[in-house]
Amino acid sequence: ASNATVALEHAHLTRSMVLRMIRMSELRDPKETGPHVNRVSSYAVEIYDRWAFNNSIDENESKKFRDTLKIAAMLHDVGKVAISDLILKKPARFTEEEYLIMQGHTWLGAKLFNEIESPVDRVAREVALTHHENWDGTGYPGNVNVDNGAPSDGKKNGKTKGLKGEKIPISGRIVALADVYDALSCKRVYKEPWAEDKVLEEIKSQRGKKFDPGVVDAFFEILPSIKAIQERFPDVEETA
Image (cartoon, rainbow, N blue to C red):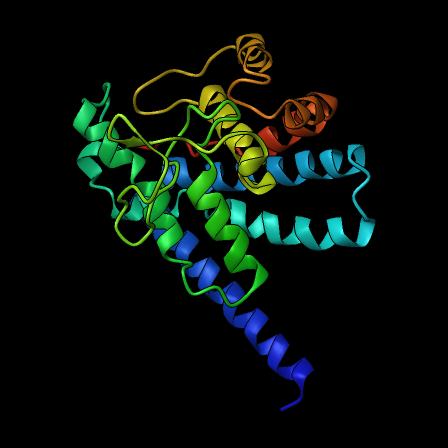
């Protein structure tokens, strides 16, 4: 087979595997996961487009990356398939132990992409692992071994340090904001949706703390697109 044929077959296989993973996640929680992954991936692509423009990224390079990011962002929470429903759907605050278990969805998701064979694998691994890292280094999981979640370096008081600033890949920095915006804006088992002005105020207040300042700026520059995506992928209403 020609190199082009092999590349096409591999692309089809990658897409097929991705769709299966997304479907597997939806089966765990169709009310939250289906619309959520569509919104987050769409937000991420729009934010990236503006961020790339603002940073004078080559147009061909940004187009390739945006297509990869769209798929990878859909898989940001794929590690949750390994987390118990008792924790995932708990309608109250987590205990400290439950919170630590929940944090494991980052490295568990990344572990699925350990054998990197394509750009999608690489970026999906980045996103799964780093979408809860914070710009100021206060996020998780930090420096961990993705095979078992154990600290690999950077220990501090028995815990790993979170990645900081540009040590966090741009894919993770963008999906971090997209994920938080969606979580605050929508109803969850443990909370009601926040008012839009309160959500935007929170994101603005976390510029340079939780979020990359450049990513926050790009987000606010495309708010109409963000709102259009929110309306395109509403949460599924429960029926009797």
